[in-house]
Amino acid sequence: MNAGDRNVAAADVIVSTRGLGKIYQDGLRQHTVLHDVNLDITRGEFLVLMGRSGSGKSTLLHLLSGIDVPGSGSIHIDGERIDTLSEKRRTLFRRRHIGLVFQFFNLIPALTVLENVLLPLELNAGLDVGGRDYAHGLLERVGLERFAHRFPEQLSGGEQQRVAIVRALAHRPRLVLADEPTGNLDDDTGAEVMQLFTQLQRDLAMTLVMVTHSQAVAGMAQRRLVLGEGTLQC
Figure 1 (cartoon, rainbow, N blue to C red):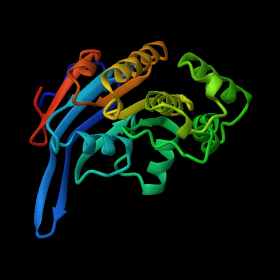
Figure 2 (figure 1 turned 180 degrees about the vertical axis):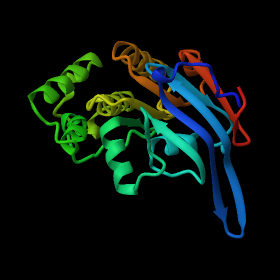
Figure 3 (figure 1 turned 60 degrees about the vertical axis):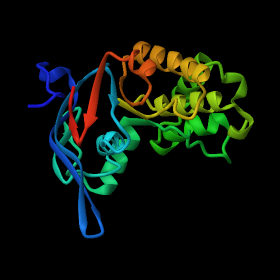
Figure 4 (figure 1 turned 90 degrees about the vertical axis):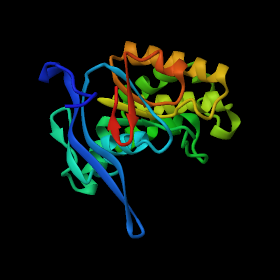
């Protein structure tokens, strides 16, 4: 048992890890990034992960997304074990069921705002009238519908991050993972973005796991966990 363990009904759990470990090889040396991480995350929860740089926060997010695979342990998302899937099947699972938000937006500069937002739907063969309407509705909710046909470089940093958030939600994912989403923004803009993000999280009843160094952001979450020396400490 560790700090991530809680007594919750199995039906309420959307993410579950057991004995999760990750070791990276650095030349002849091995570096343990995560060790024996047990974590249950409930549906609709907003969970924040904190810790010093290099404590394993981003690595844990990469494992939960299927971008990387653990060296030991298991990861279940909504009942499906993803750590044993092939790379192709992990990619398909992530594309269909997980939304990702990054610190540096990762928008495609050659695509308009609307084209960026619709990309997950296109990849999932869900680019129908209903999907388009939903995407337009999300852009309207974050105040960017009027910028739908602009390109990312024509937007401010805060506006680009709002586009990135909408893109992560456009395909109605089961789980949204965000890595320092306000880390590249000034305090005021970051606060505005987080207010929108948390409002969407509540209204859409989505599960949100966020890595952050910001105490202000952490204060908005329902639960906060700290990673240190590769394990969950609180």
